[in-house]
Length: 155
Length: 220
Ligand SMILES: Cc1cc2nc3c(=O)[nH]c(=O)nc-3n(C[C@H](O)[C@H](O)[C@H](O)COP(=O)(O)OP(=O)(O)OC[C@H]3O[C@@H](n4cnc5c(N)ncnc54)[C@H](O)[C@@H]3O)c2cc1C
Ligand code: FES
Ligand code: FES
Image 1 (cartoon, each protein chain N blue to C red):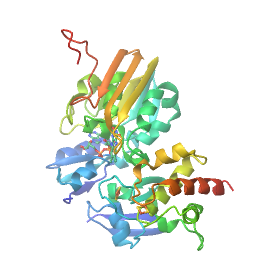
Image 2: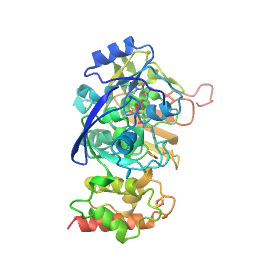
Image 3: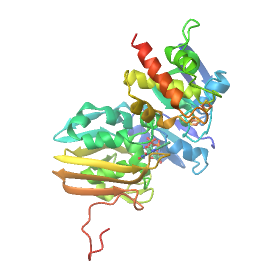
Image 4: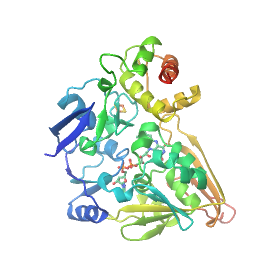
């Protein structure tokens, strides 16, 4: 059985996995980090988005062994010292969620967008969210939340 | 997904050895096609040979008037690369239009062309720009690489290492994207340059069509 080591939310972790163990399974089942959701399990919905070495990826479409040695950040790793990340705060403020199922993936995807494009216009935000599906909000308030976060993160 | 033995070789030679040594080995690149396929049990390889640890397969350089792209270079890297954007902006635009941001962060040019989905973007890009596919065994012109639906000239144990693109004088790529997946309903690359005037179409048939003159008036 392969053993994997990685840094998850700043903590070094090691675990025994099968070759076929998905990264999302490792996070949820081995590490009990259940903030990362599985919506479709077919690479479509983006509920499972986490960051691997700073890039957003679908953790249902990556093997745990492929993340061996990597830095992984999940939704649980965003808040610092009990304070929500500005993106989380903006989703809360703008009612950017209803049932909340898509939200962890939305937030992780949006954080990656602002890393690459700190000042996206509405079209760029909507295009970036191509891989994140929300069945509740109609996306409107999610887009608003990301615009708010972009403004507040500029300081 | 059935379980398999996982290998993470550090060189193309070791990857080729692992592939030949396995009873039913399969290469893993970005996994954006292969992992969904394994989940659906459409494939059940005994061994997975993960190219993720081979640094030599990643990256983009300019060499002798060509743009040379390593097989493990992601769509996001090609889309954002300054050299590609300056020399072949049509290719950067093609890569930027694949799937979604997360697929682009993992999916690779080598995986896309080895898979040869009839609706994939890169096959039209390679044929339309007159690219050459280099493997651990030989060099294959794009026109001879894409044979049919999900079928390429690659042998069982052959590994794509780099793809070279001649720099065109001008080129453009346009597609009608499937609204759900972004795969091409139809996509067209046109270019003019050292490889001649070329047109290639993806999505409209079993494979990206190489430039052919219409025969007997019936255009393909
Ligand atoms: C939601 C979604 C949307 C997508 N939308 C698009 C789109 O709009 N346009 C598009 O073109 N594609 C699209 N794709 C496919 C995507 O581009 C994949 O990344 C690509 O087809 C496969 O690349 P990969 O690196 O993920 O390869 P993998 O999935 O790892 O491998 C694919 C196949 O290629 C073989 N292989 C991989 N690398 C090599 C190599 N170096 N040498 C020999 N064989 C190799 C593998 O054995 C496997 O059979 C989409 C995928 C998803 C999940
Ligand atoms: S659960 Fe990963 S994309 Fe839907
Ligand atoms: S808030 Fe329910 S799916 Fe997005």
